[in-house]
Length: 396
Image (cartoon, rainbow, N blue to C red):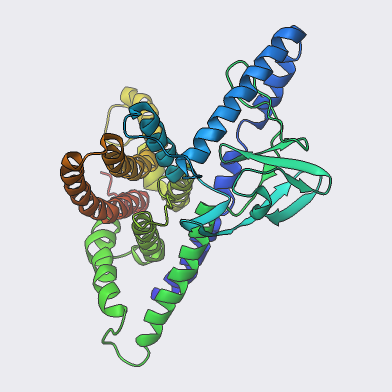
């Protein structure tokens, strides 16, 4: 069972490889449409809008630099300025990035993979922390709000009247910070559970990491899989259930470290997990499962079409609820903790620092429990869906 789990752990992690990048490409055609539409406007008005947008871009860029400590100091009396710094810091923590920042100046660039008139692969170091234009094979690219846009040698970004960039976006398959953490976690889980599996060749008594992991594995089997799926079918789904539990839990814990990763707070990742659960459920569905959706037995015939509509709606709602539950809980936890820490900076007072620090520590411990709870809930719901798909009924 554990050997299957090790293989699937790497597979699940790599399955999410392209989803966050694909999500960044959303709206590409809409940007072209906006650009064409506003190209017909009066030239002077369009020029004024562009100048205004560029000025706003410069102001945002300066605020971004200040928020990351590029030499600017915000006095304690400037409450609004400090609020802006806190907001920028929280947004930076939640956003994905093309480099992996660890602490202070320590970090490393990640590979950028673009498809724009051919494949283009280069290091994110060319962007110099998002402050420079990257030139690759005669094309110029710039990072703006965690997205890559085509530009000119000066890095010009044009906007519409809603301040949305109208520059073309290349197809982006880059290894971002979140994707790097997903791959790292898949590799980590592979070797971790492979090592645990090897210890059982010599003795059935767990050793090393197995002493901690075996009770969790047995718990998932005896308290989640067997009661919800049944003795007959549960083994088919144990690999997925174990993988999904530890994958979510480990990533949630990684999000609590100073590394600043927020993988499970990225909706593209939670959508991927929910869709995988959804498709496994549908492909596992037996005759009774589909009959209870489209032609519910044991109820009047006139009510069956109505119930079929309700069941179909429920079919769509299930992956949606899985997505939002994990995404919203983990995102909210990060925002609340960082916002409370930001209040210490805003008030700049020892009187405020003591209670806010205590509250932050309490919420941090609570968030550690939430990290495990969300992994448990996702695994439990997935097992319930699998159990409903393979359940066999006796109709009289």
